[in-house]
Image 1 (spheres, rainbow over the protein chains, first blue to last red):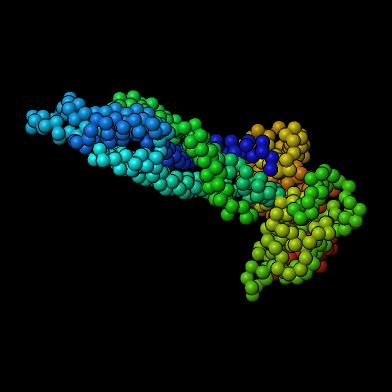
Image 2 (cartoon, rainbow over the protein chains, first blue to last red):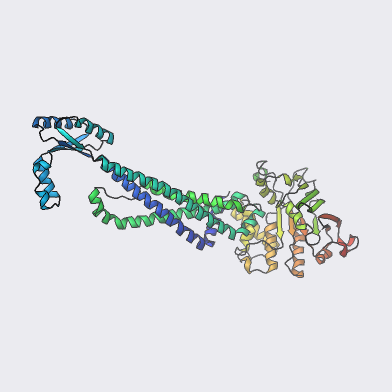
Amino acid sequence: MDLKAAVTRARRGLREERGLYLVAVSSLAVAFLCLAGVLLATQNLSTMAARWGQSGRVSVYLAGDASPDDVTKLEGLLRGLPDVARVEHVTSAQARADFLEHADVGAALGQLPPEAFPASLEVTLAPSATAQRVDAIAGRVKSFAAVTDVETYRGWFDQLDTLVSAGRVAAIVLAALVALCVLAVIGNTIRLAVARRRQEIEVMKLCGATDGFVRGPLVLEGTFQGFVAAVIAILVLMVGFLALKDPINATVAALIGVRVAFLSSWMVVAVIVGGAVIGAAGSALSVRRYLDV
Amino acid sequence: MSREDFGEEGARPFAFFRAGARAEPGVANKPILVLEDVYKYFRVDQPTLRGVNLTVERGEFVFVTGPSGAGKSTLLQLIYRKHTVDDGRILFSGRDIARLTERSIPYLRRNLGIVFQDFKIIGHWTVFENVAIALEILSMPRRLVRARVAEALERVGLSGRGDALTDTLSGGEQQRVAVARAIVTEPALILADEPTGNLDPHLAIDVLTLFEEINATGTTVLFATHDHSLIAKRDHRLVSIDEGRVVESRRGLTTWAGGLHSVGG
C-alpha cells in the first residue's frame, strides 16, 4: 500500500466528512476523559497509600507500673532496629497535655486524670519499612511485660489499600468499557462514512484496488479520530487539574500530607496511543464488510 | 514490463497486459478472451447464461447485444469477476479467471477498463481525480499520473477540463470521463456495459466513435448495447445473446440472417 497516497485520501476523507467526525471525536473525547479521570484519581490514591505506608509510625503503650529501666531497655532495643528512624518517650502527663492542646474538647474531658492517658514510646519508622516488617516489630515488642498495647495504624492503611485496589479495578473496568465505546463509536462513524462513500469504494475496486488500498485511508481516519479524542481528553483533564490543584492542595492535601499530581508521562502516552490503536481497530473491523464488490 | 507485473504467483497471477505492449510469446497468439460452455445461475431453475461459447481475438471490436435481461451484463460481470461462473471456463489471456482467489481479482481488473451505463464516476471529485484513481491504484508516481491523465483526457476530448467537478459536466462529458478512466491504464480489454444507454443518439455515436478510436490503437473492446441504431451504423462483429445463449456471432449486421429485426433487443 502506498502510504503517501493513503494519507492524502484519508485527509480528503476527513475534510469531506468533517461534520460526522466532529461529532464522533466529541463523543470519544468524553469517554476518554472519564477513563483519564479515573486513572488520575487512582494514581493519586496509590501515591497517597505509598506515602502513608512509607511514613508509618507505631505507638507502643506502656504499662502504668513499667520501671524506667524497662522503658530505657525497650527504647534502646527499638533504636537498634534498622527499620526504626526515631523513638520518643511520651509520658502520661505529656500525653494529656498534648491532647488538651491539640484537641477541641469540652470541660468534662479536661477533667480526666493523667492515668487516662498512658505513657508511650512513639516510634517513627524508616521509609524502607514494609508492612510485614512493621507487623514483626509490633509482635516482638508486645512480648515485653512493660508493654500493654501496640498500635501500628495498619487498619487505616488496609482501608486505604482496599480503596486503591477498588480504584484500580474501577479503572480497568472503565478502560474496557471505554475501549468498547470507542470501538462502537468509531466503527459506526466509519461505517456511516463508508456507506456514504460506497460508490467511491466500488469504483476503486472495479479499477483493481486491493482491500488494503481501500481500507488504508479509512483505518488512518479511525486512528486519527481516536488520537485526537484522546489528546482532547488529556488536555481538558489537564486544564481541570490545573484549575483545581491549588484548592485541593490547600485543603485535602494539607490533611493527608500528599500533594496531588497529574498523570505520569507514560500514562498520558498510553492513553493517547491506546486511543489511536482502538480507533484503527474499530475502523478496520467496520470497513471489512463493505469490501465485497 | 515492470517488476510488479511478475509478482508472487498466488497473489498476482496476471501480468499487466497493456494494449499495444509486446506480449509474452505464446500469450500473443492466444485469443484474449475465451468463454467455454459458461453457465451462470442466479435461480436454480432458470440459468441466466446457459452454455455460452465465445472467442474474442486481440484487437477485436465486438458488439454484444440482446434484449434486456438476456444476460449481456452478466456476461461482462463474469469477465471482471463480479460473479463467478457456475459451470464452464472463462480464459483471459489463457488463464482461467474462475480459479482466481479473492486476493487475485484486483490484478485481473487492472488489465481491464470497465465503462458503465451509469458512468460510476464520483460527482464531488474533479475530472482529474476521477481518472487518476485508476493510476494511483497502480502506485504510479505523481508526475507520471499527471502526464497520463492529461493524455487520456485529450484522447476523450476533455483536454484542460481536469479541474472541473464532474457534477458540473453534461452526461456525455461524464461518460467521457469514465472512458478516460478506463483507458488511462492502457488495458488490454475494455468492457463497456451499455455505455450509451443514458445518452442521446448524437452523443451515443460520439461515444461509440471514441471506443472505436481506442480500439484502433490495439485495445480489444467488448461493447454491450441493445441500441440497434448504433449497431446498424457500424460493421463490427456482433454477438447476440437471448435467454442466456449466444444465438449468433458474425461480422456486421449486414451479414445477419434476417437483418436488423432478427437480432434480439
